[in-house]
Image (cartoon, rainbow, N blue to C red; front, side):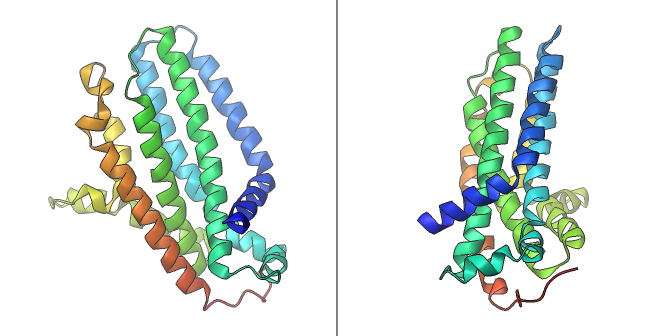
Length: 239
């Protein structure tokens, strides 16, 4: 476990530019929204950054392995007796740490804006926890696709997997939300309204079940990634 956390922390350090831009952006946009803010604008802020969080987790995870292979850092890490599944788990934990920071920043900004307009926010911690696990599931899917495909194609592949229920439901078919927790979490924030529904989202939308389903999906795709990664040649430098 220690090796996994160290790999994750090292990955976070390598993304310091992304972290700086991310936190500066959230702080700046929260200040802008805070000027003459209205309840509808607070809800829009949360909806918008819910999708940003999901997209960010995919964008960070997709190029992770390719960048590690280009820098040859992956060979240095694995030469120290680290198993490949531990290495992948470390990258996923790093993505989770970055997602956690973004979710905390968005949650704090939303709480700040809500207090500006005296808007009830009892359900915010539950939603941010579910969003965090949804970001973990997104990163796990993106990591799996990046092992099999070029990063640009992998991003499209991960998007298809995560957004598949939207295409299925467009044809009038019902999809169990637990099978696609990321899409369900993203849909839940759009279904919220100003008032009682927003105060108790954990009961209204079953976000607790979606968080558990997201965690299960993250673990399953991590296992699939580990199996696929054992068959990949990591000694060849990528162009």
